[in-house]
Image (cartoon, rainbow, N blue to C red; front, side, top):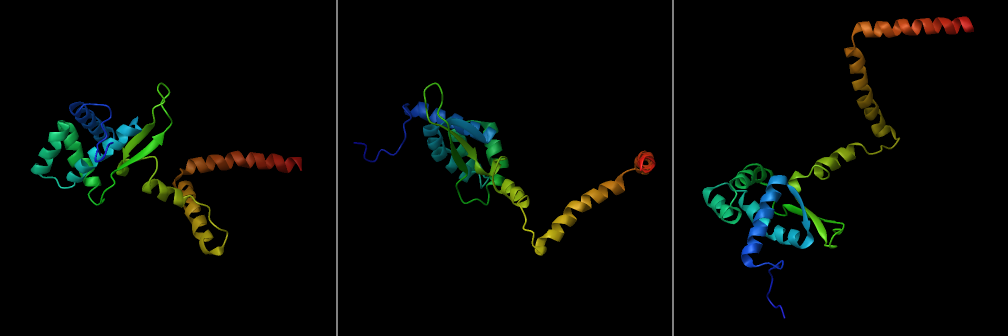
Length: 184
């Protein structure tokens, strides 16, 4: 029976497991998104999130505690600099695990683990952009502002065009109009 055995051993000794999780955490801090097996991703989340919580308050004590786990000065600088500032107002849940298709060689369950605040593919910023591009109803309430938003940049472009270009276009259009009148 495995009563009270809460740690996922990952088929490794304690020192090997600590080194593995330390390296994975450093890579997660550096690249903000890594692909690994599902079991390692779940263990990594439990290992990395307390360190990210410590990075919210940048003091010597927290830096030394995190350094005792990671042993990588560049990762510590990134963690307490960029990442600590970005997650300062988040109460937890700094990572996201997304399941991927199984690995071809051994059919292992794969997953991508990423820092939530650093995604560029989807999220709050992307959802806001998508919300701006939604279809509008044809009711009179919002149609006039949408039309004004699309017409204004085009009018500004025409106004910014040099006068020679507009004159050239007018001269090219004039002979075409004369030939149409002659054909009629």
